[in-house]
Image 1 (tube, rainbow, N blue to C red):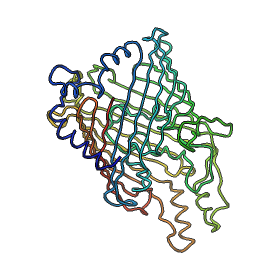
Image 2 (tube, one colour):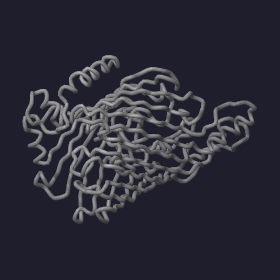
Image 3 (cartoon, rainbow, N blue to C red):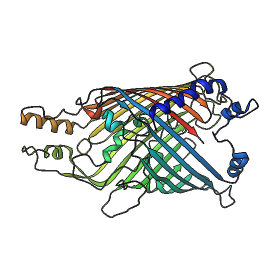
Image 4 (cartoon, rainbow, N blue to C red):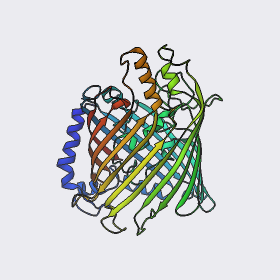
Amino acid sequence: MNPSLSLNFVFFFAFVVAPLCATENAEPSGGSPIERWFMQDYMLGDWGGLRSDLSDHGVDLEFFYVGSVPNNISGGIRHGAIYQSGMILALDLDFEKMGLWKGGSFHASSVWLNGQPFSDQYVGDLNKTNLVDFPADFRVWQVYFQQHLLDEKLTLKAGLLSVDRDFILPEMYNSLASINFLNQTFFFPTMAFNLYDQPFFPKGAHSLPSTPYGVPAVVLKWDASQSLYLKAGVYDGYPDKTGPGTRIQLHSDEGALFFYELGWRRNMEQGAKGLPTSVKAGGYYHTDEFYDIYNTIASLIPLGLSNGPTTHDGNYGLYLLAERMLWREQGPDDPAQQGVTGFFRTAWAPRDRNIAEYSIDGGLVFKGLIPGRDYDTLGIAGSYMRMSRDLERAVEDINKVLGFQFAEPHDYEAVVELSYKLQLAAWWTLSPNLQYVMHPGGSGAIPNAWVFALQTTLRF
């Protein structure tokens, strides 16, 4: 799709049609047909009552579209803009509503991605600046059965799963249901890419099964109380990414990925008078062998710094995520839940087998900041990722032996993001977004970049 044509279409509806029709009432209640259209939950409405009837009988369908025009306006690899998009199609079945049995459900979803790589070609950052910056593809995403047991204290989920939909999952400041930031690191910490095969390294049997890749997995969650839960999962640790479409291959020489999480939640239930709070602490372990960072980098050039690549048994990391509503403008009955939400997250991994060793990110989301725009959000966030000191040391030693700077030593990558989300209708948002990327790629080799993006979401 032509980026200029897309922008003209979006701007016309956003700033000409929508302000005339948009309202904060989520339910159609009179007015002209176009006003009722903007007030309904879905762009295509209730299908003449069929959608509600299906839901009453346990069948829910969701169609969700994200379209983005990221533009590198300064620094990075090169300047320019492209159009990227993603369409999610989801089916949910509630077995109890269908008259089968209590506590059971089924979910199936697929994702259709379009566009060329943006960060790899324009910015060079590891923290991808655009949410839908993935290879063009159409694939099955998640397919699983879920069963609640022991008065819903125990939940078992099994099927094709993505780890980022179960662990380190933001609940308040950013989600697919309410996208407030575009940079991928504010959904799932970019440090997780440590599990990927690294460029110029010998190939291993490990990767990360995160969106848009689903792999065979089992997740078990125990709700010890209303506030406390414990969750554990095991995933195929090597999703097949060799081409388009979904492939499932399990081999004995591939690694497995284990995740564990302890969560504490307070005032998260609907109508709670206190301010919602969520804290999650966890970790992961991958069973495959991972190459030593220093020895592998130092062996790329035969200078006698290393006897060749060596490996470590397994890889692991730890994380902490905290979210809290800091201030609520009105009471818990406010449908918009206007106020200020803050978040903080940190992650760590050993430097000897990972190219990044720790990261810190955090930010604030202001909802209803402008009078009369109760559902709009303003978000500001920052992320700092420290590259492995073993990686930095290996490059410095190579430069020292050569007597000149063969490569820029790696130190960190950081990003600051400012985003405003216009809730134009219950089913439509528009988000102008500005990001400043420092040390793209984790070193000073690529100039700092300014990226402006415009994103729209539609629920059909």
